[in-house]
Image (cartoon, helix red, strand yellow):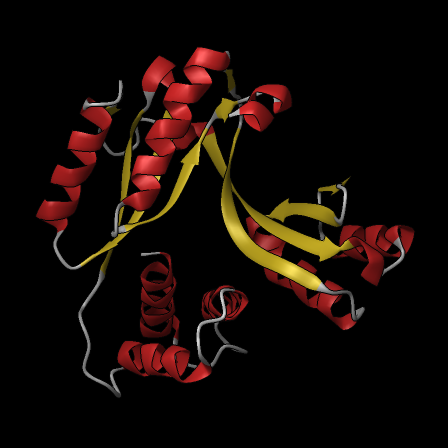
Length: 225
């Protein structure tokens, strides 16, 4: 399922923005994700050709659904599907059976902001140098983690920040756009178990590509889950 999701994203990215990853940031990100999962190059190339129309393939449609998880957690669910009726029925069943509900378009999207997200390997560049490069290109926030440095930037500055970091020869492990919640809902242990179960079920659905949510699970609970 995971590999099929990666290849779907490659195909749709190529269809929407062309088959040249240097000119198509979304395709470039999709190819990087596929390669990180050890998808063979020829398989990735075929997915690109299906997207550009040079090979026959299934026509996937991008759909974004909004809704709620248990305890009022807001959900944005990005889907790539060849059958919208099937997808919405599957998602409604998953949510209804796990303390959630489908919502109308716009019911929760206002709670999130679109941002650029970049992870850089910590040992590939001096942190102070990275901070200056990223901030100068438009980055808003840098957070040092155990092995990586997380960089958040406005959506409109994502490409300029990514290029600036790439030109510094730092090792970028991930570069993608994401939806960041403006506020979060803190969950206790029981609520966290319920939420994690729902997220796993959504992730297991063939059509679901990404799920954004505004829950906050404390590290000690997350590690014990």
